[in-house]
Amino acid sequence: MSIDLELLTVARNYAVKMENELKQNQRKWTERFERLDDEMRSLYASKNELMALKERIAEFEQNKFLSGEIGIARMLLEALVNQCKNDAELIVNSSKIQALLVIIDRLVTHENTHRSEVHDREDV
Image 1 (tube, rainbow, N blue to C red):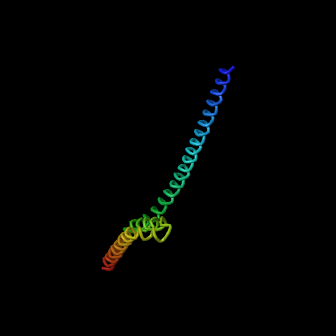
Image 2 (image 1 turned 120 degrees about the horizontal axis):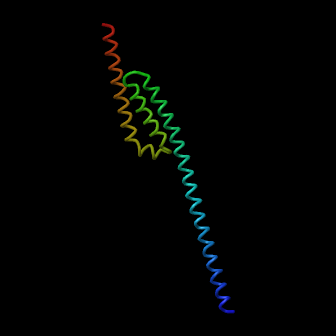
Image 3 (image 1 turned 60 degrees about the horizontal axis):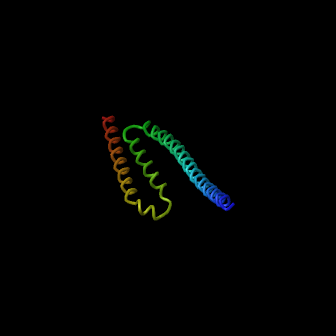
């Protein structure tokens, strides 16, 4: 009888152990599925953002000369500023923001110079 009792105790302990492992595995798989779901939602959002970006680039390409490059630089600046959630992040990214502003300024200056040269040639 003592062997049967020991055997039942061992079997019960094994069953409890297996049940605990099963619960742990269920939690792990649930977490994995939740992460995959989040990643899929993120990819879908990224795809929508990419499509919107392509549409904006197409709008800029309809204009002539450097307007597309200026538009893309402005969109990069906008995306960088939108990523900043508080003043501290703005300060951390201030050098990148300044660099983009310099690029935009140079592109605008160059485009205006080019346009005035083209306009002067047409007048002659």
